[in-house]
Length: 335
Image (tube, rainbow, N blue to C red; front, side, top):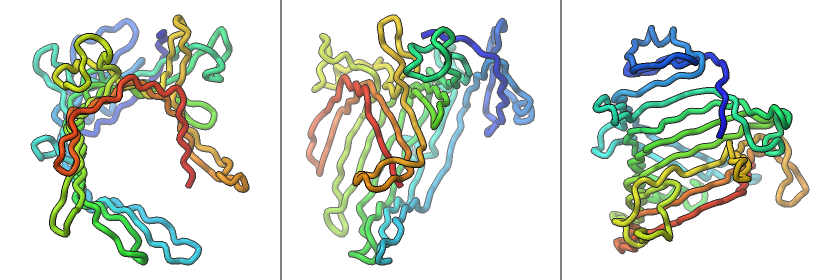
């Protein structure tokens, strides 16, 4: 990967007072982070980019309902809906969700985020349709958090689904998702004619994905996936790794990759970014009409494992999906 720094200017407006920031540009080395007040943050700009940290930010959030209702049909009778109710954002202890930069030892640097802009040299013109072969560049923005610390979970008290005019609306149960432990992430975005190219890489660990479904009017059973791990590789097939025994799984699993902005021209790997495009005319399934649509092209690479799956009180043990490599995957969303 080759990058060339481009001159750029940023202004960052502080959303919380507990933000520390360093401004980087060519020829200047920053020795440490400095805490700034809101007024000082308003006057900050950077030539090449911004580095900032988050210190003990807690988020209290409760949502009464998030409801999607379908429009009426030709007969005027459709009032179907799905509604997620009593949604609470939480940490592992049940308190508010939080994000943190740890000011402990030099090795504990959670919460640092780098935001930069650059011209990136890419593999071939056909992949990007941008520039000319000898001066091929793609202007992009990038955000990198190599060490991140958070506790964020979502509890959904009720899940309603149905049609008020056809059988009524049913309570499908509840769900608890998280906490989501995002260890690191980076993403890059760049424009093209009808949308954007992007790459998103991340390492994610999830305590539980639990769905509680009703079996009686007063009782529930659960479908649970516990201790999810999402990253690049667990070294499947190499000595020491046993997918059926979580105690053997490596912990430095790298980052799951969605899209590839850079490629590796030396080894014949061309850039293959994920894309999102908005189009005004796309052929329908019948071929007789055309509709507006959002198109997503989503190449994937990485591995997913969970340490336990439980369904209705029965333990099904661990599971592994190793070596995912989807070179091409298209998602088409038509309203």
